[in-house]
Structures are given as structure tokens and as C-alpha cells.
Length: 114
Length: 114
Image 1: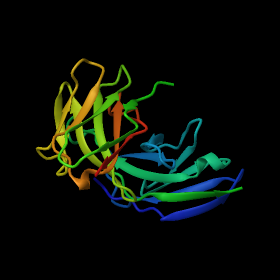
Image 2: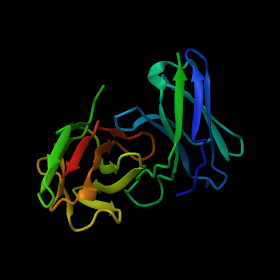
Image 3: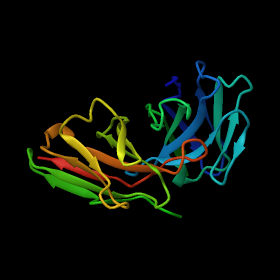
Image 4: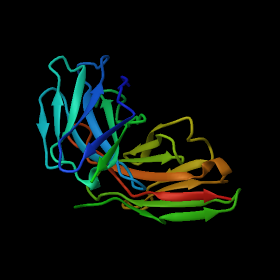
């Protein structure tokens, strides 16, 4: 799987927007960009994914650079409940047969200050 | 919202004993996975399961490990003879299809081998 690079940690204040960056300069044309998060003592949780266009859902927005070599997960108004490790993961659903496993890196630890 | 359910939430076992970790994936999902996370480390892929057979397994998933989907609803991970280094959080996940959906993870089973 292509590699992603994320900052080890970021800090934000409650009710402010948060922009979590991810670099993936070796992304292939068929790699989807996935974001998951892991709250303390819980399993990973799907946040959002996209291929080329920006995506929005009830949890977050995903902004994908035009060259697709980087992306940004945007939390529009951080809450204390958003404190978690955020993982940016690339996956090509057309490779590996029916596997489609996710490979987790270390992610970004987001701290939200009250 | 549909959930992946894992039981037990915590299991303590003696080294050398067999353990079975249980998972109930979301009912219309077709792809099933086990991951583990040793304390303070990354989430690691163990095995993927599709169409009633293993589709991929990692180096961690040696002969001591096995998976089953005995009755069309439960998905189990068995560790035949536990070792101290098997102590970890074990997460079950399921996915409906590969392209347009994310994984749903369970809350995990904390396995402690003493």
C-alpha cells in the first residue's frame, strides 16, 4: 500500500475548526483516501473517504488536493468528543482481490482544549 | 445505527489456554476482519474472511490462530495456546462492499494472558 505521512500530534480549541493534514505523494490513480479515528479505549471508527472530489458528511469534510498528493480532514467545530487518533489510509479496492484490508499507521493524536 | 458486537469485553486467561473471541458483524455485511492492537502500538491486521473462507492473513496469524463463521451470524477468533505476547485489544470489523463503504469496527476484546 502507498505510504501516508501525518503529524504525530495536533492541538485545537473547542468549537474551532481543525484541519488535519495528510501527505501521500506516491498515491496511485486508483487509491481511495480513507480517514478513520480511534477514541480512547475504543475501536477505530470510519470518518470519511474519497477519490478525487471533496467530500462532506455529517462528521467531517475531506479536501483533496488537485494532484491528489495530499488531503485534509476538516472538523468544522471541534468538540471534546473529537479528541482521538486520526488515521489517513490509502486503499485501492481493485487490488488484492477480496481482501481490502486497511493498513494503519501511527496517525495524528488530536487534543481538544476546552 | 447498526453495530458490530464483540464479547467478552475483557478476558483473562492463563498462558497455554485456548480462548475464543466472539463477534457479531452487521447482518448485511459480506467482508469480515480481525485486527489487534498491543498497548501503545499500531492497529495491526490479522485476517480477512469472505465467502466462508480466509482471503488473506498476516504473518501474525500463525497456526495458533483460526477463524470461523459457524452459523451465518457469529464470527470467531480462536487462539489455540495463548502466549504472553498475545495480550492485546482484539477488534472485529465488517464491511458491506469494497468500494463505497467504510469498515465498522467493534469495541474490542481486551485479552490479558497471565
